[in-house]
Image (cartoon, rainbow, N blue to C red):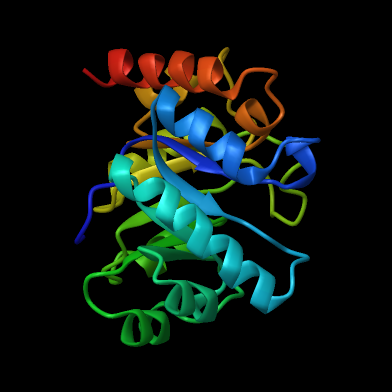
Length: 211
């Protein structure tokens, strides 16, 4: 593991931001305590994705918050982002590492126990435990891990764990107690009336329960 990913991890969703720009939501969230941002764009053209990533990267620099690109190693390289998050059907980790270099942050989603076991030999920076709870923002998964699944992964894996899927104010503390080093949220912040306040509340829960 090259980088420690911990705290509140924001995954962006353009549709959930409503009339606000992703940049506006990101800045509010980071000001409120988000410690890592993953830019996820499924429908943008490659050119537009790169341009957006460069804008967000520039905004994050003063805060020293890393920018992770979802799925797209080409966009991460072209924009100068800090890393990439890949799923089981994306580019293989070994290939992504060769392209991104030794200093890049690379996270890997795990959806089955076999994924967890296979990841043990990989020098990824964190595992994205996906999803912990069922959620409408992640519909292409193989079932929810639940808190028991998260505990099981924590007891086995040598990697830090980033939990994602259905996490909010009500269950964030339990997720941290179960072994997550960081919690990733999408709608909890992107759909919030006040992303700053939501980020502040969630990051406080994580910090308190992690001590």
